[in-house]
Length: 244
Length: 286
Image 1: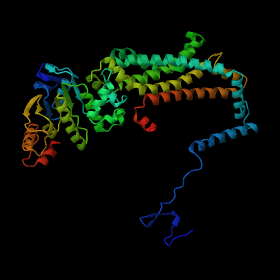
Image 2: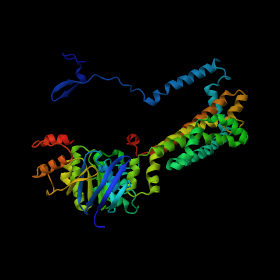
Image 3: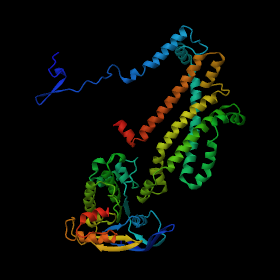
Image 4: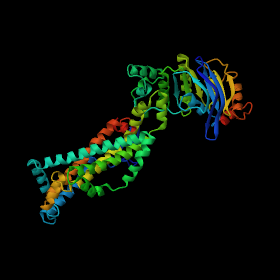
């Protein structure tokens, strides 16, 4: 299989509700994709299908292995030390060394022996990132992983995730509701609406990106319009307020 | 003492960057004795009153023996070798009953907790039996098993069974679904999820159940040993009643109490070790 994600005519229903309706999606190896959508648009539903947590009602779904997930909440097992969480389910031999190396990559080497309930929100989420990366994933699924972090921690996490993506080179699918985050990080941005990909735009800005770049606000306006947010020309601050 | 014109004691002042600042008023503190000693005062006062009452004849020995004679009796019961064999008999009954009750309770809770079929088969009868007052089963157990060791152990086993079953079953069902899901994503199979997520996640509840089981097991032991026992602490007490020996009765009760406290302390120590990842325990130990 050459693609990291290959999806054709994917449908998912919960009772009467049709969440995904004939969705097509292709993601190349190493590509960083951001998936935007209003709440209830099926972002998380799609991610759960890609993660293998749910079975689709209908459609073709091929996903590169190994695939790993960072959830919105860290989901560390509180009764296992941080390093043991990182290598959960990985063969015992050399596990400690692999965990320590992965934790060092997310600047958490000094907390390897800490109990998860003593970690701060940002630390716990970095541990979750180390747990996802230690498995050398071909596909990394990120389900709003920065949503519950404070603004400063979120900015540091953006830099960290971009650096780790460059070093390890997995395909990344970042589910987010933050338009700026999507523009900062993704090669390509998808907007999910009505159970399909309603918009698919490449991001042609050079990295590392900054909101001050020419083209950032144009792209932002395009995306916000696609998300149904009425953008007032020349008033990006108001538009930002409206988007949250 | 030099009092300044502003009316404060210069010795109660602090010099900060050349300015004299009065210290905050002294707070009255109890520095005389540590808390543990202060808390012993009233129990000892009660013992002293009790002893005095016994000496002057206000408290007859047939109502209750004096503290001094109880201590003397305890000593002589231990020294003569009468107490220890009875203690061991009681301890063995409790240990066997608890082992059966906790094992069976945990086994059935695991089956019911880990599978829907198991729950459908096991949980309804358990919920019905739970409503039966267990100590009321004593006559039935005697009819079934005679007045041997079996009804005594059965009573303890049944009494300790339900707390373990109920708490562990609830504990298994209460494990965070999100953690189970995450463990599955990271490649754990069904047995791995049970071992790494469900069992450790339900351990806090199970330990609460075991502590409850211990409490109720000692209670059932007391009741069980009053049915025609010919050994054990209960036998010692019933025998002492026939001879109006209130001192021996109190010694027997004290032994029951110490056994209860001792086993509870053991479980709490296990708890501190097994649940050391919990923030409350982390805070207490660091």
